[in-house]
Length: 222
Length: 203
Image (spheres, rainbow over the protein chains, first blue to last red):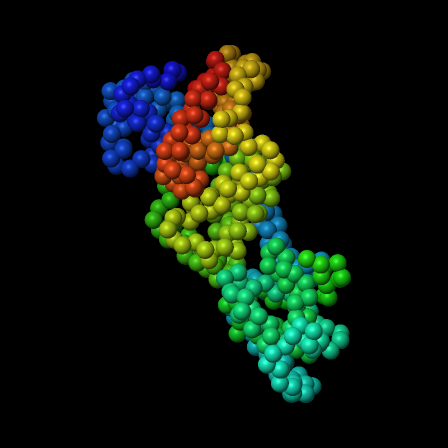
């Protein structure tokens, strides 16, 4: 199989396009040119046959890695919070993801109703937050804190994230992970309202919001 | 033995579907992502398998690629096909991984390995009269072996052309290089393969 040694530019051009003649992706003009050339160039015609055999061989390989395992592996990675998750939580997350709109709507409605009732019974009105807060002046939530793991939509600007967190009276205590997960700490009495808010009103900004165990000290380190 | 079909003919309807799916993925629609994942898993796995030469990296780079699809779907601007966009991510991740592993091979290529190819031929006794299926298997192994001798960029051009049925313009878009570079890489790959194919090979 000798490479044709010729100064003919048309032949060189045709020869260089042979692979894409063989795989059928040349445009109409190129295709017509190749047909004409192959009719008069036995070397290229022979080479086209060889390349077609190679293509057949390359295409004839079976694929073997099971897909379902790979997908759930990626899903775990996307959902991974800074802390280690118990299995029931992962299950809850998958259920949420897999739930239809109706079920999600029902759950959110239920949570909202329960939250409203709880608020009516338990919560005293908050003092108006100061207009300007320094980090050292930030009021700490009443111990013990509740924690939520949040993943924000990557396209949302920081100021919107900041505004959201301030309105929830939540602080970031861990994260971000490479996948963009943060752990928020907030008043336990506010957790349900915060979750509800994150999942509904802010749903364009928030990909994921679930209650989470408190991060251990190591997990707070970036 | 499963015959994996050539993906050269993506009809217009499925192109539109994929762009729609990607838009939903940009809105963090997991179901849409699952569909896209299933559609691309066989092709991207195969592509990475050939690029990376060692199976243990394929899982990692596949995950890295599809993670970018999940996180950066909002950056897809519709200027190219969805397949071009996803393959480009996989291609560049694979090259980076090869660089990290120090197995890039470089543009000038790995040393010619005529001896090894001949040994492969002798071992499988292609000069004899093996049955057709065994012969095809051995030839496929040989092609695989030969392709692994090529530098990654040339190997990618061969795979994208013959397995994934890409036009040369599409390969240029995937690799982020000029069309002439794609043709040059194909030229070098064909020449090298010609040197490496031992006597008595069935093609």
